[in-house]
Length: 449
Ligand code: S3P
Image 1: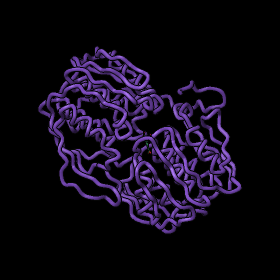
Image 2: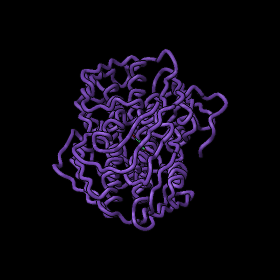
Image 3: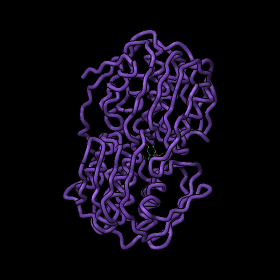
């Protein structure tokens, strides 16, 4: 569970004083294209770096999290060139072509970078150290250390937390791992280590987690088997460079979907959004609440399905959300809490304890923030009960969590008074330009720093 940052951890987080001041009311309208998918952007750089040949990535998310991944591979000698604002050329070093970095690899706020890199670096013939900011240093790493150690990796941690100190192994062997959590980061870290292992590596999960790693590995020429909660690959396969077009991130689009859905009269078109079925839980949840959402012009971006999403605002109703939808909408719950607060009746969320170990404890952060805005909520160990009501103006703290900050910004559309959100600099980890884009769609958002 969460721990306070302490002994030996990096305390030098940037002091964040960005505050959002959002005036109440308005509606969202027009056409919006949110930036590229964060999960796919990380993976495109990683697989491009391990491939033979030059990979071209378009629609790359230039956010702080993805730049941590990019800098880490540059520090290991991989040539990465930015050819346009969202386009990269990655000169692959091959599976064995990475070099020992000169210093520690600082992965900032990015859990995806740390857990996936742990898999890749566990197999290298050089030592490495992975560090992160205070939030990342509180997040559980044992879930990736344990399976990698069974494969033969040598990882020292601070009681299951970063920094991770990785030493060269004697060799990795494939394992069959039954993960206690449905986690794409854990699954992906293990599969990436499996590329270097003797024999085959298999991951079983208790639920469906996002499958971008598997899809992208296949487009780099790797054979990956996926069926019935089981994903497996054989070690020793070579990756061949390819083109990776990155769809717009459904997790970023979710703030706009909720913003439009909660205001009758809104009509918004979100362009080229990734609609991979392992990510579309938010569409299921919002539709169950009564939202008017249409998917238009379905098409493929490389290995990923995309569509334009039209949302029209109308009254929503409270629902029950159980564990089966949690992994499919894992990053969208802060926004879903806002939809619940604006709905008629009660929304109950259960089976979502994972939300407590994200960039912040998102159950606590959303419950406290909604309470400060006059909504009746009850937090539970694995979820919450939210009574739809009338949002008042007020001040909330994002606790440095990008998704909490953007969710409360959208809440102002239905609030009776202005909402001030403190500690919003971390929005840049996933969605640089959020406030400007939201303003063009109709949110009355100001940024104070
Ligand atoms: C991610 C997986 C999810 C998600 C995170 C990104 C990924 O985490 O919450 O924002 O890119 O694989 P878990 O795998 O821990 O559920």
